[in-house]
Length: 365
Image 1 (tube, rainbow, N blue to C red):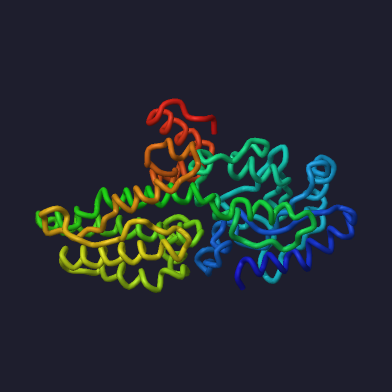
Image 2 (cartoon, helix red, strand yellow; image 1 turned 120 degrees about the vertical axis):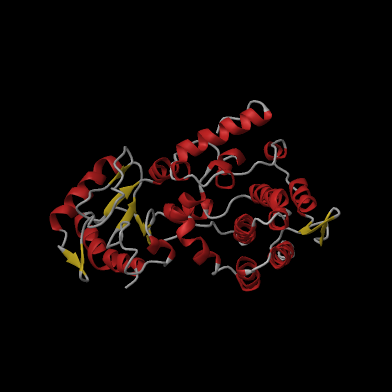
């Protein structure tokens, strides 16, 4: 059984009946979010080591949290079954303990956690729920954390808070997406000629590494165009394969990475770049420049006019804050260092410091 289905049944058959009896007047939302391959449906027998098992997160009103959160966590601990559908209750093999904060509470001995909506924002994204979510803040939000909050499932929606959070965070604003797209094309422009240059110099391994980097950049464009957040490396390719654009892009990218010569490698990558460029207009991001493949100046390297495409996308940004920033990128486009992308507070400080150093004092994020 998949983890989401297990947790859905756990809530329906165990947690909800108990809540109805013990707290009959308590309005709540229920669902599953946070860590775990099951949030994306990628769980299997191997991937049951990151909080996999019967679990549910409850969202209650701020006014109810002081009076009821501890009573729910303690009360369920007293009545919980030893197992559910053959799976043990509790943090059997869960490296990420439940959060304990002013507006979040859980216990390792069972899988029921209680939050307020503000508590989810504070504990999972380090966001002040009273502060506006401006463009610079969006650039600092690690996409893995956004995946963890917007994947999964809502099992019950009495308040609608969990659904609203998922809707608000489910897709970045248009101008933020334009900025990220411009950054991806800048990255492609920076390195695309190097596939051939490294190959021509006899560095086949270096040429292959550059091709793989560019393939990832093209794949990230696919996620952006379809309004999906890419998960971290383990599931990046699996999630990409689900995109509509993957039908076209996967054969080209696979051929590029399997190519034995740099000439064939650069040809396939150029074709993949052209294909993803042509997906912009159908996705709602039309280009005023025509994507084209051609030589890199007078050298025998095939490239796409990535610089012009990136500039065109950047020119369509309306947000004055983003228009004033250099095209550097979001936290995930700058680094994939785990200590940053799993820690939103560090990511926010890094983005603020980077843009302050790059363009003068940055607005507080």
